[in-house]
Image (tube, rainbow, N blue to C red; front, side):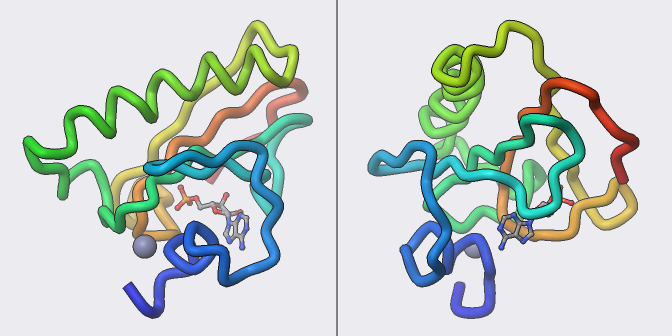
Length: 110
Ligand code: AMP
Ligand code: ZN
């Protein structure tokens, strides 16, 4: 999607530093952190939200979920909160599927 900020980041069109990258996901720091650690696990595929998942996305979703404890381990974190906002009323601002991982001094969200 041309006008999607997370597609641009995932495609390397922004100078966002990746904490992790593979063929299907990228992980980077949230630009407005709501905790000491606040990272985003983002699919390279443009999927607007959980509502838009297809059966073909099952493997990708499993991978994204597994990235959460892997990134926590990599960052030395053993307790974290995971948030996925779905739809504008929930607080979803970027219509490209992503998992928030937050840890340490969590601040109000949304
Ligand atoms: P959500 O409200 O669930 O859609 O979350 C979107 C998140 O993306 C927010 O926490 C924003 O701070 C974050 N965000 C928006 N633009 C950028 C960016 N360019 N780089 C990193 N994080 C971003
Ligand atoms: Zn996108």
